[in-house]
Amino acid sequence: MLLSASATGGLKRQWTVKPASSHSAQLSKALNVSPVLAQVLINRGITDAEVGRAFLRSKLTDLIAPEQMPGTAAAVSRVKQAIESKQQITIYGDYDVDGITGVSILWQFLRLLEANVDYYIPHRIDEGYGLNGDAIRTLAQSGSELLITVDCGVTAFESAELAAELGLDLIITDHHRMTCSPEAALPRAAAVVHPALDENYPNQDSAGAMVAFKLAWALANELSDGERLEPRLRDFMLNATSLAAMGTIADVVDLRGENRVLTSHGLKALPYCELPGIQALIESAGLTGQGLDSFDIGFRIAPMLNAAGRMGHARLAVELLTSNSAIHSMQIADYLKAQNSKRQQLQRKIFRQACQMIVEQGANHPDRKSVVLANDNWHTGVIGIVASRLVDKFYRPTVMINAAGDNGIAQGSARSIPGFCLLTAIEACSKHLNSFGGHEMAAGLTIENAKIEQFAADFEAYARDNLTDIDVTATLDIDALASLGEFNMEMVKELQMLGPFGQGNPEPIFATENVRLASPPRRVGAGGDHLQLTITDGVSAVRCIGFRMGKLEKKLLESESFDVAYQPQINTYNGNSSVQFVLTDIRFE
Image (cartoon, rainbow, N blue to C red; front, top):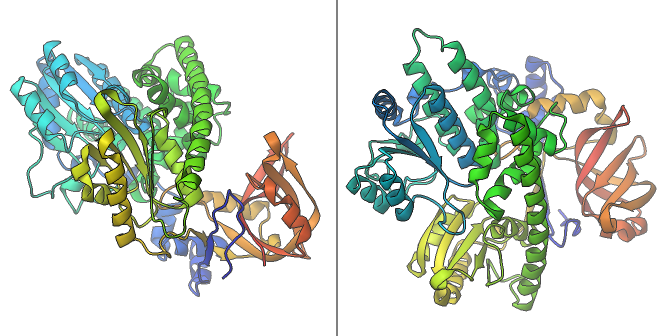
């Protein structure tokens, strides 16, 4: 197949159309859904009718019992002891949305149990990711007797030993990849709660907020008489599904299985969540609160929460999510919205600088397999987002480094492409690093400025050895070829049953070949960056919006026909609803 045009900033993508399944008609009949929806389910690996019903109509009772999460029994026992003894508990969480929501769940739950509890969030720039020795010393001196981590700690061997030396008991709740096998040593702790400690645990892709949610749920079960939770605990856990859903979506974990169940119900509960901070976020983000989806969380609400840690201190975000005051919550939400606007401006500036550096250094040459950039004027809180945008544009594993750190120590953020384990690659170059950690697709590191150049060379060498030209050719997975007329209002509403969308369950993309313009395209948006057009296949016509496709206006006018890839959506304006295609790509002959 032909490569698509550079519709989104220069990246050419290979279209891959999933083959039509002969089983789709049978599955369609069994589930009483359209063959198109059945085909999308098959593309997601769902061929059994019972599995399909569970996928489309998940129930909270489908969640895995919290006691099955590895490590919960020991953790529940130690937390229960701390509550009964009135020991000082501190919850220590990461500064991203996953950590923020997880801390908010555990802190509020323990407060509900009248525990003596506080929380600590490290400063993204001054302290960096994970448990750090200075914080542990400060907490021990302030009287903390039990430290519970959220979304960090499973590789913090030195910090765990320090905590033990200072008489501070440690419970680790985490989901990040362990540097050791489950059979090998773990950090010294009273308990380690981690889904990967048992390879048979069904949800190995639990987010940090999910792990925290499960620990709170297991405690609730332990402290309730009979099989049903006490009403106050039940009400809290239902509210907590919204927090856990936000953390799960923001951390881009696989949205299938249990994660799908939690996010589906957490999103539905968001408009009715009794937490003032949640309602303030929804209002400040300009959302109605009705029909919230994973896009609203990932691109509207989560960036506001992340702005606290990126531009200031993430403790403010926890304060928002745990506040009992509607007025105070609104004040914080509006402040975070303003901070997020500043973050967006800074992000755009750094992105332009990075693109210019890539061209000047020849890092966009087809033979290059990675991008490593460093600058002493870049904001550490923003470089991770810029790295993601560079991956979208150049489709190469990318490391962005702020070289302006104290004592010649720089901080970096990295993002990857599918199929290239970033953490493994960084481990292979770790002799140059002071510290590192993360996931297959995202990681962080610290490095001495003098070693950046050699790290970049070794990282590129590793990428060359482990990536082919095909690997660094971006692909666009098409669920099916279709005619425009297939997507009426009823069909598009039915496709929404597939949500919430995210990693592992992407929003379906369809394609129609040999369409033409039904009317001239029109550039819209700031600077004419976007494109409005109406297309026809000779039978039906559909209005489309192409974000960041404004530069294709002239080429469209010159083309007799072209192919389009799109996501069908329902557009509501002034009370009127109609089907609209959000263009994903355009392919020219």
